[in-house]
Image (cartoon, rainbow, N blue to C red):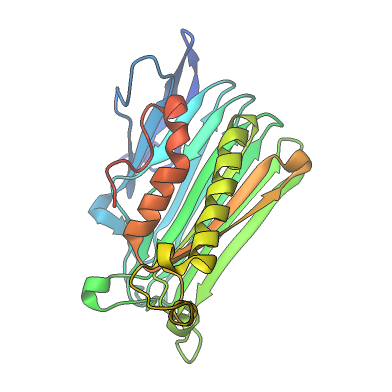
Amino acid sequence: MSHGEEDKENSVVVEKVGGRSSITSCLSRYPIKFISPKKVGPSNIDAVWVYILNYGGGIVSGDHISCKFSVGDACTMVLTTQGSTKVYKSVGSKCSHQILEARVGSNALLAIIPDPVTCFSTARYYQKQVFTVSSDSNLVIVDWITSGRHESGEKWDFDLYRSTNNIFFDDGQPLFLDTMLLEKDSFGRVKEHMLDYQVIAMIVLLGPKMQFIQNLVQDNVKRIMTEQLQNPSAALSHQKSKADFFMTKPSLVASCSVFGPKKIGLIVRVASVTTESVYKFLRHQLAPLEPMIGVPPYRNNG
């Protein structure tokens, strides 16, 4: 590999070409690769799909990965994965880093809908995603993590997981700043704090094209939690009484809150005892994206 190739930055640029969203630049280097299928969904849907793949099937201890994405005015781009992102065991307390920067143009849509991150025992992982948007940009972010390799008996056994999502207007004003930190203390009590929940997820919906979906999601979350907390027979049919129900934690909990000027953004937080139930939740809540991106998110998962 030449020195010039080593200096290449992982990046994708999407612009209008002939009236359609098109990739005009795509550069990637080890340890990741970008793949963009020529057709995802009906041909009349104007959307570019990009899959991010990790060589070796995951992120290795000490990896430093940086990606940049640019979605031009009135363009649509979907960034996703082909499976969960595995973060392998830390070697010598080395931390793996993945940094994503994205600029979303006017009336454009960027949807980041990956599978979850799964950290192996002792793994140390830091992820940061920074977005720059216009007042009428549209953004979907799904950021989620499982407790680990259940089949190997690992549940919240990693040493460090930190995920930051920051959104700024193009004039530099902050719109949304969020960090989730899970760190094993000297007593290893991450598992205790999580109780029986095995998946933590965050969904961000931003922009004028997302308003309809935001309203639907808020109504759905309200209904789900009302059923869980006030109608135990519907939520957990095997429970014998209300007393039994309230002694048992709901299998999935969710909350919503709006943010930004004129409430242009919505954040949804979810905790669940199974990965499958979160896939189901995401499929249902994000199904209205289909006319914009070509296919329903997570249609083949869970």
